[in-house]
Length: 212
Image (cartoon, rainbow, N blue to C red):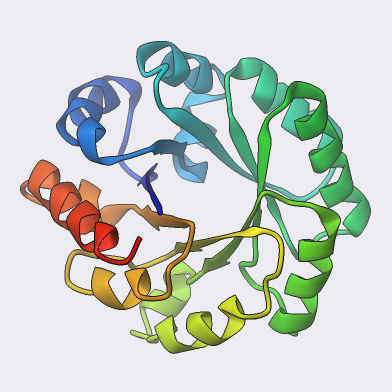
């Protein structure tokens, strides 16, 4: 079970160089979140990979069109993993996967907003993605919706692809998400907004290890 730190809002490159060393011992993947990438551009990926070569770098592009081209640009800029939305055309997802195969990189398909979740997961699972991500959106989090039980049920649908879980995960609720035994847990503000991010990341990792 791997831990990914999501760097989204209110981050700049300078802040990242101060923040990542605090949590580096406890994380496997550094995510350049969508808001962060929009502000800094793809050059951010090269900087992150250069500074932390031992970590994988994920570009949360949420690709919706021009799958091969957008994924290729991110891979050439230093990304190890890119994200594509599950709600887009199959051809777009297949284009992203083609780019990943060309550069020997990985693809995470984000199920955000997908209708008929189980059917779409089966379709994505058959395409050969590396990760399927069950994602509680910011808007759903505002409703305090507990989706951990639903995630546990959907987890059984996935046969081949690794499972990632994201959205609203904190030190307080990590146990119920870790109990699902996903391959990847993605935590953003649950760590980045902590007064002691290094201790929070360590706690989350410790709980995860109990279910690995």
